Length: 307
Ligand SMILES: Nc1ncnc2c1ncn2[C@@H]1O[C@H](COP(=O)(O)OP(=O)(O)OP(=O)(O)O)[C@@H](O)[C@H]1O
Ligand SMILES: [Mg+2]
Image (cartoon, rainbow, N blue to C red; front, side, top):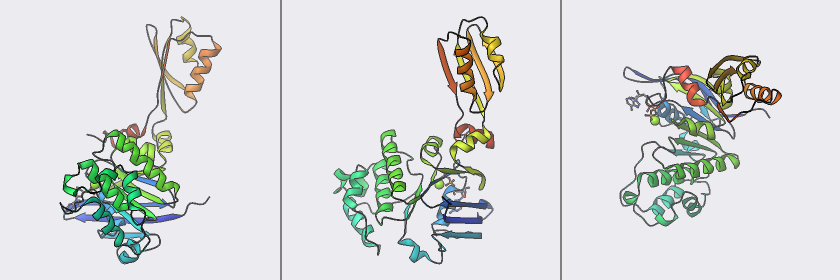
């Protein structure tokens, strides 16, 4: 199936005084995918997202969303997108249900079932609570409800699970997958590599306002971090010699009965297993170390995303 972009960003640049927040950023988000912009604090994620949402105007470059100009066609677009902002507030004494009804009334489209959304996001028992009495994570979940209330075609989520506990995080990942399952497009930012890896179909890695690479998490790992490591324990005296003969093995380190076998490519693990089985090597422990998106980030930028 040919990819059909719903968001196109080309040569986008945004400066604040002397700060270049976003520089020559270009990418496309395809219809029906979960696309993630990942990078450390201050990388330019929110700036990029808010330019696409029409909330900020880039100094240079072109952006289209669902074929519309986010700034010029803001009223047309508003009805078809949903936005969760990283820093958002509501009146202290607005009740949860009031916020949901108010938001629903702002759209010409038939709104989603607000109570059902509250239920899905674990806020049903907070329906009558004042906004100011919600915990940080509950406020965040309410903003996700508000972003979904107009049943949008494209949903923008900025740092969607920051500050949430692991259980709430998993529930929201499921919800986001559900949005995709209904044929919608999701554009999110995160600095959580695990979130990007588990949730996103494709990710763009951004640092210092520039996109370093874009692809599926699997392909990014395969491209930048092909190293594979197997660690195993055996008392077999011929084991070291046999392991060194495995195709695509770069290094075998043996220390007493513990071996570390390093190589590259997806076949390495299978090749080690075949070698163990063919030579009837008795193994008492077997572990693999497979790189992830975190390692890709480290390789591409020279530092961890959390530094
Ligand atoms: N309104 C603004 N005025 C001045 N500088 C800004 C403004 N908004 C962002 N910046 C600067 O632009 C850069 C990018 O900020 P941005 O908020 O886009 O980063 P981010 O990737 O979303 O970071 P975070 O992970 O902390 O949310 C930063 O250096 C920031 O200080
Ligand atoms: Mg941000």
